[in-house]
Image (cartoon, rainbow over the protein chains, first blue to last red):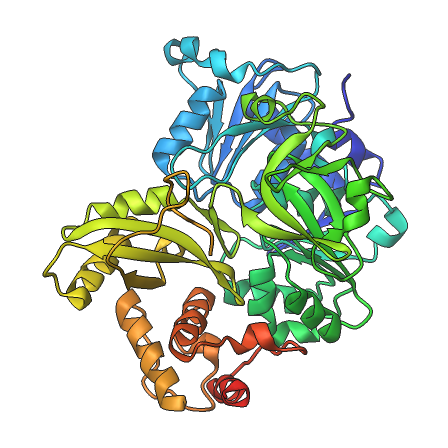
Length: 447
Length: 80
């Protein structure tokens, strides 16, 4: 069944309704729709096209969503942070016919196209345009998840009366799941969305202050940074959303104290499961009665091994999803939880993946890199709990005998700096005689 | 405490190649000191290894310090 396209939804607003606030001024619905139509015409895309969107300024990215949703077969939304190899691989596996970046939109050459549709032809049951999102892998193996506007906007509030009072700030990459949520929330509820072209903290915060943003979504780590910086306190925030990491009680309390009267919500979502649920009561975790299916926003289960399972009404498509479904249709979120009193508390990823301020780090990848440093006999990488940014990367190193620890440490750090992003580099390095293994003979990654 | 904290800041900066402002003092704004929020998180983790406590996880009323002076006072308050 074909859902309504983004442009059709926007057409319901009056033409002069203001949607986007950019450096060069305010964009009305009419202007956005016109820019989108111009782009579609320029693109030579057809209903069979599959378009990769990469590295676009936020405003062009949003225009592209409006231009192509409902008109093409699929849009592949590529985060800027992906490296070239991963980008190419995804463009290929998504079977893209067009590639659009900040410079141009080009057709992908035909001879290469032949072999491309195998993985990409995910069992699409609807005629709605697929929004293909990349999972946030940092090992160079991000996977594709096939959403639609309907699955992405399932939990978006559409209260136009409330919506028009909000000016949303956008601090996320709009091509990531969390960023798309902010864009759709603002567009579909008739709010004004401040679109910043800069990822630099200083310019972002100045934009928020100058434009009197009153609704903001960020990771708990970024909220801590905003509170430390302090300038955000002059913004009269009415809507505060936290997502992308575990929201602890400290940050929820800190925000409540600072922005008295604001609606504070922490969202449990992932690229794979979409938005599973939102928690409004200002407490960390979620109510344990939801597990007994009482007042639960969707069916939830805790498996014997502590994995949280969810059964969303509308699941995205793709092999990655099918593999993680059990016979009752529950999706393994691969998040570990524990019941504590009347709450279910999040413990972290089952895979041991580390969440550094919203950036996912795969321990095995970091271990592989560190093992290449001369003098490293063995290494264990794990997440150390951080009251500031969720987790930081920690490493235990078994050095070859006779090596000076200080020198080896500086060589490891030097190598890491050359080969890793800053959040992947271990912040804590300790030297040990041997690594602990668990009963299964695997490296222990619990912190 | 102040010296210990400054020593660790300098050590993290040298490990990570971050440039720290020359004269760290009580009025230095932490996010303008040269440490970003990741560096700051590493500082708190290193201090926890050294002092065996993390005041930010012990607070009943969350406080997010803006200056080095505020940061030092938080550690002093929770020592012992």
